[in-house]
Length: 190
Image (cartoon, rainbow, N blue to C red):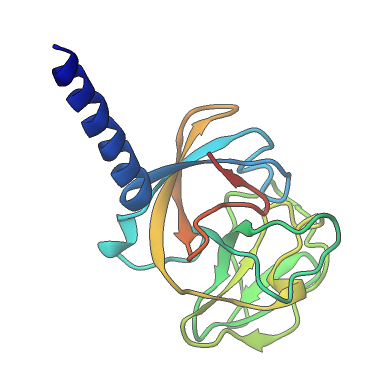
């Protein structure tokens, strides 16, 4: 009886470690850079297998290791969470509060109407295997406008909100996991 219980506990722990390492992980959002989509205290679940079956799309939410050029003040965090705005080959820029992709306004239904852009986007072409990312809280987000594009390095995964204002899928939003696999940007792995 004791041996059976020990085997069950060991198998359960092994399964939990394997699932967290290769399949799903939870993350905590400790900052407002992605408000109103992800608010302080929200938790997201990340499926690490999702992008094995389809490619990254514009408007996906990505999680990545803090770029070396990121120096926006405050305590440094190991990882960031942002939204993909520009895809490889896109010419991205801004006019006033409007983001332009290849000279056309980007539809951003996830933002409240008349959301201020904050720092403008310098006209540039997104390089191959790279993404231009921004926080949804545009005036307060330190993102690709300040430190450049993010290169995709590892596995991509789909995210769902696990708790917060409402436990719901974040829809088409996704998460990119790089070698660190700890969200910041701020978010923390749990």
